Image 1 (tube, one colour):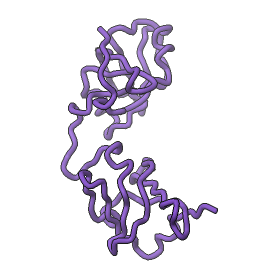
Image 2: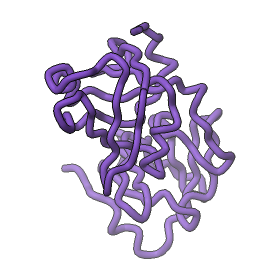
Image 3: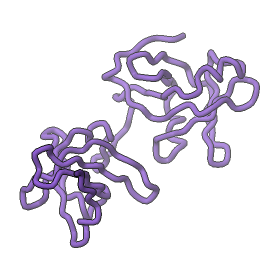
Length: 185
């Protein structure tokens, strides 16, 4: 059974990479940590965007080496699985369990980033995962004396405070952090 859900209630948690085998199993790239955390959801919404995603029942999901594999109820052969390659995997945001010291990336995008002394660095435009830590991409304001982009590690030593309701992040930039700035000319 496939149903639609409004896009503002869905969170992207992975992507379908390619089919696995001939019986319709899928190789999944999981954004959850640990990667097998994506197996904790009974239903996935698959689509190129949340707005066009359709619901699929997860029959089985397991880790095979470094890959995540999944079987969906209504996908029973390699041809059906091939049609899903490249689709994003979404789950209802209300089903995502977030600890007090954790944040959803979608909640951080658009936050203004200030230095502890009150100076505005810019707004978060993206986040990237680089193994040991996540990186905030912060675009300086268009009217900044030196426009550019900051790449800041999302770690306690740099991020002093996150206020999601105020859409504000306060950072302490240790000496040497100037190297994390790329000017735009």
